[in-house]
Image 1 (cartoon, rainbow, N blue to C red):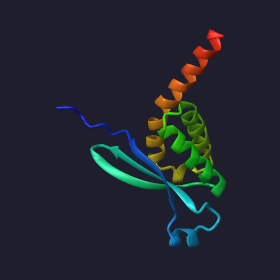
Image 2: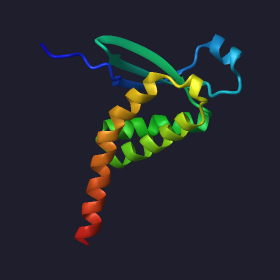
Image 3: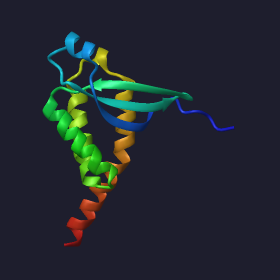
Image 4: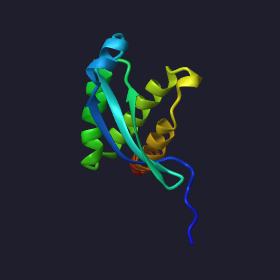
Length: 123
């Protein structure tokens, strides 16, 4: 029997409008959040990760769409953008969903980075 991984693994990433009550309680944050669906330890979870601004939310939305369409360079940019968002949070507010996001994006972004390296060397 296979062991269940306790490491969070994203199954879906979506941009969602924050609930009205959340916008009232925390008006300085973006009106949008990244909805992360992930699995860990055999259970499924869904978490909304706040984004710092509406501009970041728009960029994340565009990069998510491009990544889904197979644009690996967009995955690199999305990884960097979300890593910046993760970095502005205090340690006590860090959610395991961030780990799931980065585990999801890292292989896609790494493949794009390797393809760029090969393209540069081939010139």
